[in-house]
Length: 201
Ligand code: IMP
Image (cartoon, rainbow, N blue to C red; front, side, top):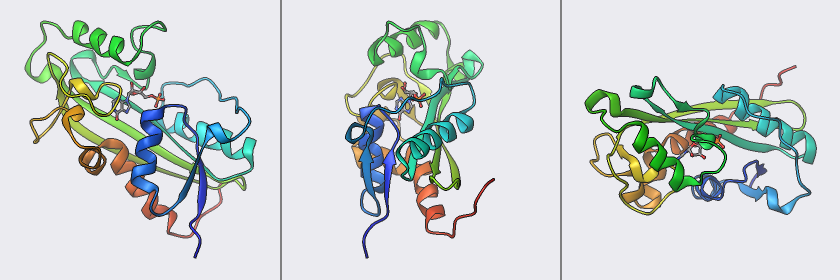
């Protein structure tokens, strides 16, 4: 039997790699680069609404089923920031490295529970016919005082995974995908997609 196919609605190469590694055995995944450009709406501050908007926009524009995620890093000492705004934390001129250095600076002088943090991911699947599936995953940890490791992407070098004593960027790709927020959300989505789909009006 041929594998179901969907478009992965992300332009983040790190995320796309993880989607492939987590779902590639069961589904054929196609990246946005294979299609004419899709214009996505501006993101708000709600993971679920953002994830659904991305998947729905791609599904409607390309007339193909699509999946997307919205994710972020929530730090207790910053009142849960940067959260859904993680990709833009510190302003538009920063890259991944600049953002994590900005985070370390914001937390300088903070210790213990103030450095507690979690990665959050909401993954959504949408079909051109109007069906939607949504799943959430979280991964607890704390923010290190200096970057460690060089795998993964984004804030991985400054996030120590609870119970492992290692930075996310020190894990092998398959180790990260087993325990990460995205790994958990996509595993749940995968299970959900093997169930009959309900249609939302
Ligand atoms: P968005 O979901 O496209 O809004 O971007 C989420 C942002 O959160 C990314 O650009 C990263 O900065 C951060 N982020 C999300 N997931 C991860 C992860 O697995 N590792 C490191 N940073 C992440």
